Length: 193
Image (tube, rainbow, N blue to C red; front, side, top):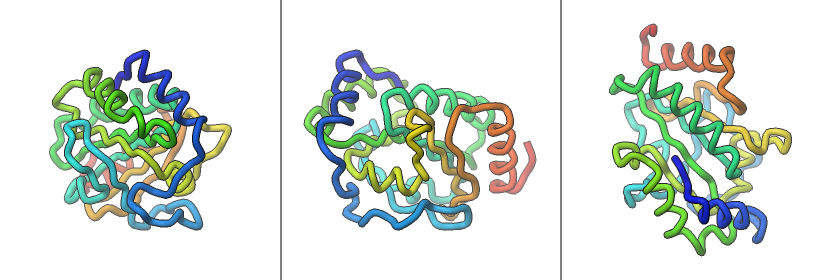
């Protein structure tokens, strides 16, 4: 997903202007990060198509890679992961992915502008794979085990067909991490690649 230069300024400013707010879904912040084997917490946002999005429901019946980003720079890592994932499994109907920028603070005031920039920079066929979430930054940082030293990382959770977490990672898509993801996807769909 590509965001226009003006939206970059808004995104960068939004992350630092206002304090974090409660989760978009109204759920309280979890006490600890999600773990492998647990159900992925409910995440509510909006697809770039404009439809309401709820995870893990939107992925029901499919193995899904959920990639969250908390800073503007994290989008680069998310895009690389998404590209590699699409190259490996783009034609497999049992597998899907979701890019999820988590935005807070003043970003809500520029939502139409930010979403419009993302929509124009994302191919239309991928609009149902990008979910913008406005609010709940602190909650989702806790859920995903956010580390300040990894602020610009992509935070990933692979979900099985029932919405349970089967693999977690944050960082660049290095070969070892991608091999682990590949094995996790194969196990989750019940076949080898």
